[in-house]
Amino acid sequence: MGENLVYGLGFIGGFIFTVLVIFIIRKLIKNKKAYSGCEYDERQILARGKAYQISFFYLLFYIIMCALMDIFEIKWAVLCVQMFIGVFSSAIIFVGISLYKDAYFIDKQRKSLFIFMAIFFILGIIEFVFSFLDYSDGESFLTAGMLNLNCNTLISGTFMILISIMCFVKIMIDRKVVDDE
Amino acid sequence: MKNLKLKSARAALDLSQQQLAERVGVSRQTISAIEKGDYNPTINLCISICKVLGKTLDELFWCE
Image (cartoon, rainbow over all chains, first blue to last red; front, side):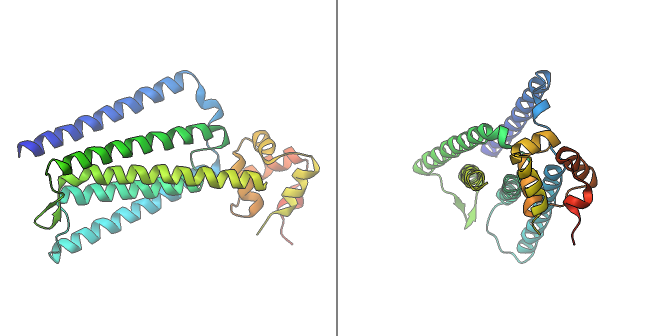
């Protein structure tokens, strides 16, 4: 229980910290009027709506599947891990569609895409390292055949690496498209 | 369906997709998507493109 409490407090703390950082960054950007060259056009807003829609319906489907598996007593992960996987994977779908459809990044912001790719890759590697250290300390990822809280770091690390791979693929696709035009 | 009329009108003015996008106020990808036929622009965007290229809606966006 004590370990779960620490984990929960860590999660809430991290969440609040992230919201605060995003709020401060947005405030700083708005103050500098850096948004003037980065306004989104109608196609991008439409693409974003599509990405929200698909990731929302995916999450709905995922939750229903989890509920059904619980009803049929197919135990594969503790509830917290099931929810985290759902949130992470729907976020991945949203990011993937947004990237593919250029819903956020335009040519002027290519550098930002490189920075995002690097940040997510580094964070993913850090999470893998922590996960490996936990594993070598004797902590198991399974409890009674179910994925437990210990695997959350590994899962989020995997998703971060996936985001960095998607950014890399997008950069490569754009480079080819620009060359073709 | 590809919009070759838009592409040729842009090329006639020796404008790149990026230049046209900047004049219209959209992203280069949006102009690219319209030319490829991947995106149907709203009437407002069509009018903006027509004004920049000096063409009518019929000349650029009417399918025969």
